[in-house]
Length: 632
Image (tube, rainbow, N blue to C red; front, side, top):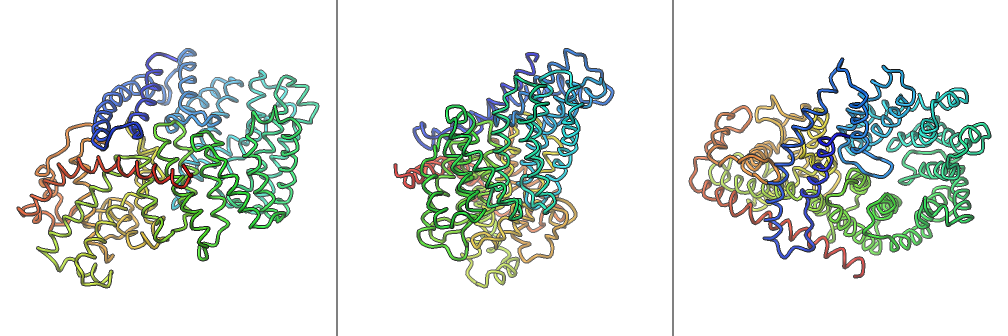
């Protein structure tokens, strides 16, 4: 790999580290705020360098018809592999990897290089699996993940063809054969996150059994005698056991569940026959989790025994392990437990257990900062969010999501707080000047109390970006310009946020505000296009949050942009230019009111600085709370 591409990799890793500085060893909130500001100045410099590298060293070779020399192909292949390694959870830049891996596969096919084609198919399956998991967090838009899944299965079909004995024998080298064998089991992970039909369920199981059987097939063993067949057999059994993930989310029919449970018993026997070898492939406690789940799902264990054993297993987790095993025990295990509860009848003991799960999950996310495996962690965290059970008086969905934002992406937490304060300020002054604007809000809330309206406005605004939690790894792409596919994901966040909020008592009333905060006042532009913000009772608040959102983004220079922010007067001119189209016309009048401008000036200066300091307090409180529930 040439030096400039190496530099892109180094810069991208450094940017991720700088964007979420650790707080544990910092002296105080002011120290944290200053560190965050200095870090984003450094990020700006690294990002400019990265953009130039991509423009000169990568993008020209992605054009159709461009000749790529063998040396350049080697450099690009090494660069591609540095950006994403799904097997080891190193996920530095999956979107660029996706673009590049497709180009390399097409080039290998054009050159009729059989070995490079197999390597390209492997990259394609890995890339599609990763992008599928990133996009299927957007629960409101399953078609995006399905497109990656379809691409992945198109590549997987070629692996199935290469498993034919004659085709397998004709492969050019052992490395190609090993990649085909690895993908014979790995490719079926593309079914993850999908509710399968009975035919698909059986096919999923049967194809994994076929992959397992290769370890006992003399023709394949003879063809590749130095391959680690014990590893292959155990890994195949592991993929079979994963068919029951998340309380049998794939919907395996009873007879398949029973067969899976038998295979998990087989995996358990293998492990205990040679623990010295198999403990390198799977921790004993993870094996216990697979066995507990299989026994419960197959009806071989009652729910009370299952819960008791799951709690005991959770207490043995390592909260500092950010590998796949650590994420499984810290995030997946609690979600598996929660999925078996009745959310309408939660006992006091279960409430305590849930509080413990949530608090520790937040601490885990907080300590995750800056790691390459962020995308994989978000996969697990999104499942916990999707199956959240509110605990009034202990932890609401609003509390949990706000803490997630603070832990995962401090600038978005500051932005959310700023938008909430700006919204409350705008609302208060508009109620003074034009109280009739809020008639529908008073009716919606069933009150004539202005303080209740102000509280509603503040909380609705604070929750407006909850949809971004699920795409934090995309938001953290500071090292280059967003690709069109990434911007399309970000444009989904209002709808995703509204959809996850509408099912919870603490956030349901704010859903339309989240859904509409990127729509124009006149309803002609913005996103989502299928939402009519002009006809809902929350319209005035949507208009206010839209203004507050744009105002903060325009005037902040930390975490939102790298150039000089606008002054509030420059923004007022922008507001005036868009009056009646993008912005509500009554807002331009407000920006001429002296009393309002005095309050606004304070919020944009001292208020913002205090909010950056509050990030420290929020994150520190999450960390301290987790110590209580962990017994430290």
